[in-house]
Image 1 (cartoon, helix red, strand yellow):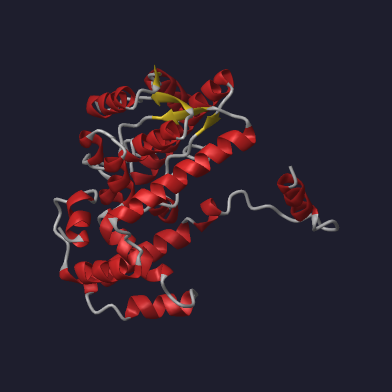
Image 2: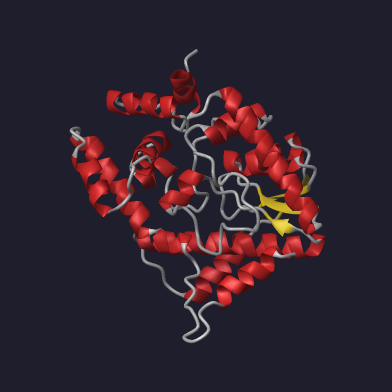
Length: 315
């Protein structure tokens, strides 16, 4: 089977049709190495596991807490830590959750042989929502409530991490990082094993390779926040389409507003061009998240951050 067929078979939302334009671009990205072959994925996995081993040894820490949503990202994150010799505490955190999602999270905990926990935060969420007052009935209101869910979960994970003397894993992938598809102080932990991996190929393919249950690998991605039925609903496209357009932008020899506009305007397919504009809009609108917190330099001693960074690296 050709690599393009492997990608189309495993990418999230693979039952949805994809146009010839995207197929042609996918083949070009395969040729450039942006979509690595399965053999290369094995090398990538070994490298990530080695880095987790090094982090564990250099920081003298052995326990990690992972929120197990029932999705492939959290399952792969837990599996990589497990392979690296960490004690992995897998936690399901339902908040008025679909039972199938929580059940998949527990299935992943069992299959990967993690230390398992379940904290139902539904009552806590209801109490916090009532305390904070009225919420809009539109998309903005759903987002606000989704952020409460994410931050309640992270509060719980960090409390457990403190209890066991460990750290908290980030479970976001590169596609979500670029799209801003995460909650500040709600999804970001201490160590991020898969944040460099694409959602459309590397995450599900590696998850399949390391023994994540098939039901999780093939599950339709959702945010787990009750905002929409699937990630593609919010993105306005599949993860494969998003990643292809993202890699187009990243492959520009010079990345600036002019080259980006030229790239988008030269797309002759109107539907694809609209999706490219949406990708660029998402990246632009969420850049503040990736720069958070934005530190202001001291008005006089403006090298303090640099010196502190050097001090950090000296240990």
